[in-house]
Length: 344
Image 1: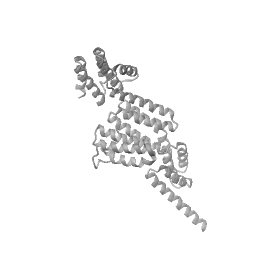
Image 2: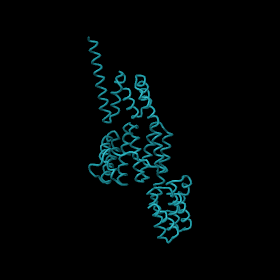
Image 3: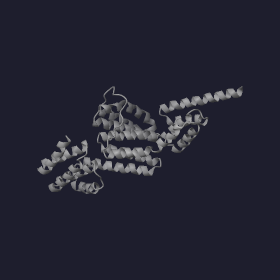
Image 4: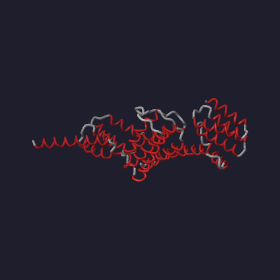
């Protein structure tokens, strides 16, 4: 009788730990959840091995997660095998998404579940994000990750009714959510945030933010011993950073800008990056008074933009057209105006 009682008490204790694991997972305390689920999985309680594997994958503990998946399959939970397949390609899917972002392909495949209950300005969103970023720098991601997620839940619905500044502001919250998740030891949680940050940054045509997100993702990949994936993220980030530089070029040093752009433009295939580089070359040659060469590059930029739908590229061409008119370069100005008229 005492043996039965002891077994009953053990079973009850294990089930209690399983429930504590569920509560911890819902609250985002994944390491705590893993401790509870590990005890329940050791006792082969229900789907505890599957739940443990899911949490371990989120924590980046891939080897142990895979072992528990195999144990779960042996215990009659075939869905655990799919969990292995899903997580093995997670970084690859992120990099494929990032590559599509860089060529301007449509990527907006998600929306918040509801409309905003209160309208929040981009400036207010950014101020709160900056305060949380300061907390992260001083105390670490674990200290503020939950607060970042609360901030995100409050402002993410704004992307439904917002514009480019709003998309940028919310993208920065997703970037911070990903970074603090990584610093909290949850790389699997970080990647979806980084992916959404990239999507929103592209929607806002914010190359600087794209470069920042890819750099952070690359640093996370390095930390988790994935140097090849880190290199890919960094390479894409360099392209975005160069695009951002080309956008912000103030024509203060046209000769230096031309030297840099001439080196880079040949590395780009057809698409937005090439169009922006060609436009920047035209603007800088125009600034030096070399109208003939500027007109040649403008023609290449317009041809490159023929099948391109990019507000940022159109804005840069319009600036070139305005500068050409101011410089009295009528042929160049008309060439660009024709493109702008077609793009609306």
